[in-house]
Image (cartoon, rainbow, N blue to C red; front, side, top):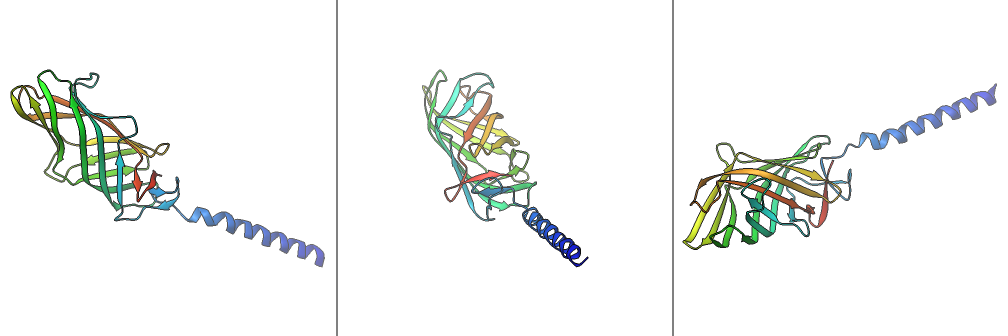
Length: 216
């Protein structure tokens, strides 16, 4: 009888230990943004995230969603400060403080060159969801605005484009953010400025102090 009791107690103790081991990792929920891999180390609020264009790609502002006429930039980078990184699943937020473009050219007839492409009205709010979507919105009462300055046969021309928001997607396979055919409408500029600009770009890798960032 004593032997059976000891065996039963040992079995109960083993089962309890296994239950505690199993419960340990499950109780430690991860955050939406991590480094070191999916479910890795939480990105700290206040950290600065950066990303260049994905290797071999360009940022484009084309006159149609299917065409290739417009402005192409070989270099672009964004900078954003993390403002919230909650437990996953959820939505992390960032303050987009900078987005630069350089090495830009144009194939529009009458345009000799691209003097600059700038993003105005910063900072914007970027919301990265566990579902893989990224939404960029301006401050209340403002708009997302881009100013393109062109060198033309008629002199310098300034084109101003505006839109309500940007929608992109994130991917952990290459730690990227992709924007495809985001539509902007011309609010000022000459006839050499196309009436609608479609913005596309892929940024990768997104990093935090050199460590790749994952969305969970």
